[in-house]
Length: 308
Image 1 (spheres, rainbow, N blue to C red):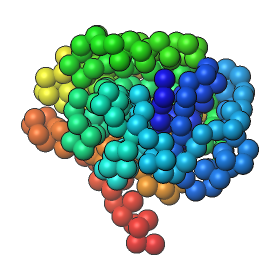
Image 2: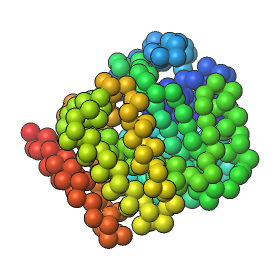
Image 3: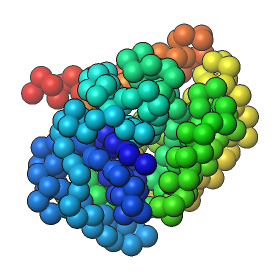
């Protein structure tokens, strides 16, 4: 399968490298020092599952040089989607599938508006990974797992083909019965962890063991789930306990990617996570006081950084 990985960060770099190692025709889009390092020394993966290097990587900063592909894995930050979606057009042929693996809930619609709804799938990924250095991806925890599905939940040949190449690469993948539910389960989890972690600036072990922040976690899970339910997503109440149990099993030193960006003074996904909770809550008249505070703090903090 000819695959383009648009965004060779922790997520795209890890999954793309595993697919390339299994023999798929993978093309990476990267930029800056990361691109240069990959071109010179290959793409290095440091993982709890074993280290490896992909040499002679097909990597570029120009999608036009790749041409149309069977699958585009979109793994940029959510705040980059409006900018990069038009740049994906040279990758799109008549039968191209687009698989976004962002943390938010709005990306499929953003991509559909630019590239056509018929191309876009729903996707969820679970992994803790980051760029450790230019050309180096570090997978630090959580079994890599992808959940995919057509936006209308139809069982199609293209979804089955993606499942097949993922399994061939030895990676865990599921086709969702309800992809909207899968996306919202991830969103409830990530908006909670990212938002509280970004404001508290503490790893998940501290957040879940401190009574005050544990209560914030529990209340936040409820808050985000209520927004999803009001948007007609079929989210069982038991989802909150399920996510809390998952949080309790995370590596204690783990931090969310948005949190790491905030703590490093980089632009973050606060608009697509805490901001989305607030906006969607207002749309369906569901109060979101926890995320209103988080969103206001992060928005003000990022504005202050831009003024420095």
